[in-house]
Image 1 (tube, one colour):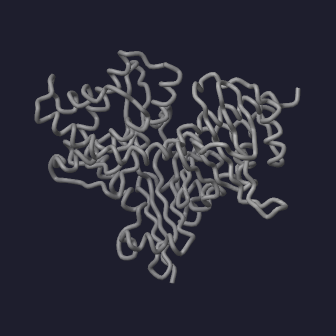
Image 2 (image 1 turned 120 degrees about the vertical axis):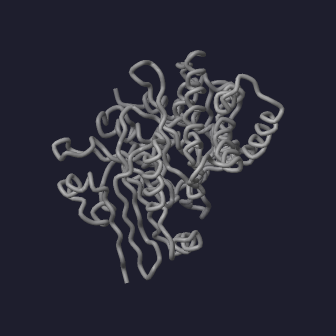
Image 3 (image 1 turned 90 degrees about the vertical axis):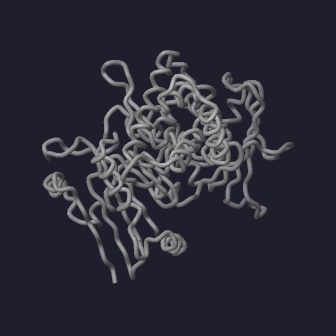
Length: 418
């Protein structure tokens, strides 16, 4: 037996009906090429709304899709068989954050589909916010472009500490306070504004300020993101602003040492997550360019064509890379000998060499199939479904992905027809 739950905030019901979202299936079937995030069990798409409908200018639709039996069983052990879906939990948590005046995205609706009690699909819709960027991507770009000066960094650190303290004083433990779950934008007065989003299932609501165990949990996640981005310094200033003191006491230093210890094992996971985030950001740009300016994106028909282009441009300089780097590609397609196809790239002092065998351990390995890789580098929208299905995996030090995609962009531009 199939059951559905569909809840829309009262102030949004009219424009929802006008847009045509009258059921869970309507929302789950919505199509958008503007994908903000994708994983094996979820995706987030940005949907523009006609202003004449009386609603927001845009919304984000986050969909959880549990198509495989193993995923449904996993969700069952997380409490969804008799409890709430993650979408419903997030919707209700965000509404409570709003009521406690914690800056966050406004939740609009959620829905879920169950079959024989098992959760099959769910979604949450939040209002779009213009001019924002996730804090991790903001930090990555600021570091590379050197676009944020010392005074601005001090303002950002103080602003972040203030907003996190405000959240904790309001009794909200976020549960996933990584930089990818914090939005940042520059305000009209030159300062910075922050929004908290995607509270984790480990988040909690308290009738009074968050206890120390919850504070350490949240702040260790925050510090793990800084570690994974190799952001040095700033922790002392952040903690002084958070604790509202001018100098740290011995007790404060002990607390900081505790949260740093908790952050260390989380940092390696964040490195992988941020590499995927950056890859999705790069891929979104490619899809947009392929749709709007198709002549600026090289479309590859075969793997041989792709690697031939790399070989023809082996001397292209990658000046931002000051170390040797070995990247291995392992494609699940088999060759005439019945073996998986493999290629490797050696980046050495601004020169890139393409080969078929490795003389050393790769720094990063990309495992996929030829159709998925060609869809990704050509900016084809069907790559989203392939990424969601887990058909592209990365192993090793994924922070080097930036240098790979930068080189691909450089050689692709050179290979475009004149």
